[in-house]
Image (cartoon, rainbow, N blue to C red; front, top):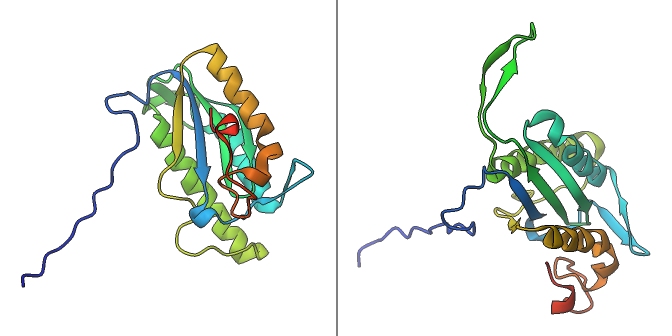
Length: 193
């Protein structure tokens, strides 16, 4: 029998043909590998973030400072995942000033996958530092799951519905499918928008 190499193909879950660098609003969910609860807990329907959870939150809040054309909207850190709305505004190429304040070069257009990649990379690095320096709980293999959930927000009603979903997510933690200790699966009534 001939030894054959089996190649696994990664299939994108992104909308085929859609330009994720164009202006717009995007709802995202990013989950830790194996749904490990590393960011704190939910007590009385309120997230109680640990140092790692506060680090995740600060990286999210700081994104617009470092990435032109990116705005962070409604966001929440759950024990093992995040939900947030990313806005790409005026996301075309921009000139960055050099140390003397003079324009130098052009910044590349940031796409949603670029932003998520940078968010995951930075938070992973900072989490690893926390494990080494502050005894944060270690993780096996990857920190984040390889992919992420995204939804293109197409109108104001959808935007408001998703903001409400994010804000009320902690109240549904006991039935959240991301919760490894959930008492029952989340019903369609409480499903992602």
